[in-house]
Image 1 (cartoon, rainbow, N blue to C red):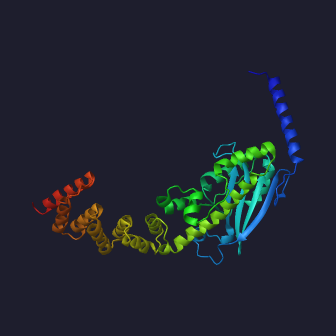
Image 2 (cartoon, rainbow, N blue to C red; image 1 turned 120 degrees about the vertical axis):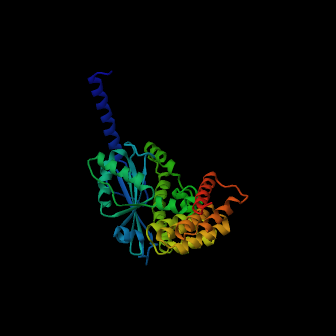
Image 3 (cartoon, one colour; image 1 turned 90 degrees about the vertical axis):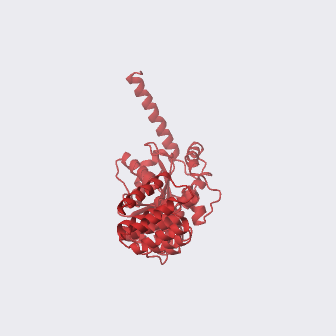
Length: 371
């Protein structure tokens, strides 16, 4: 183990190197076209494009959060790592705001590690706690990185009001496209094509290479990547909101999970969405809708769906539900027994648990009828 004096000398040498590096970095101005210096180590730029939200007011997120469009902030970070560890540092922050007919995107760039506190002081007022933050996986990643970096410098920033678009995206499209990374959503749902984009996993290494050689050429791709992420968030939110506003008109979407969500929210369009999907051959939507009718006590509609499911698809689910209906609701054990016997007599194989349930019902119905 080294002595206290050698540890002291090592620490003093390290501090001396940091000071020299700080001085060299401060005295150097990066060639960042379109960016302005905000401090010794910090740069920012503001870009704008036409807003997609002009005339759009019927927005479910506004109803649930009690905010206006102008109180939404779309945000995304670029960091030195892909994990949430304490050593992961934010070097680029992108923020998007809706302002009347424009969509404003601000980007803040940290040019070197020693300037992190300065960088955090600059972005601190740009992240008001009372606003609602729109992200893609920000609830699990970006938010915690922001919170931990501020905490390490004795500041508090938690961004508690979050609306993470990853989760509704998975509900609406995972069964259709598999992976629900933002890139996959762009290509398969939003019809957005990126050109010369940098993959997210390459971003940390590009930043480290820049720190070594002060060459900002590759950084421009990272800036463009972050800009497009923010822009895509606005398109994605609008797409999702259009689906929930007019779900019956939505085409490329998982109608089962959409219908399930609408039922959970007691949305008036839920039944129409599920019924339309069932009419087009989505059996799962028919089952879900029938159980909704059953819970509501609308036995006439529930029975009609079960009968249609059995007639068209020989659905074992429908058979069991119909048997329960005839036995317990209609008090017609004979009709229930005829149906159960018919299914047990079919040549097609039944799942063992379904067969066991049908045999159980056959026995109890025969017992009830005195056989």
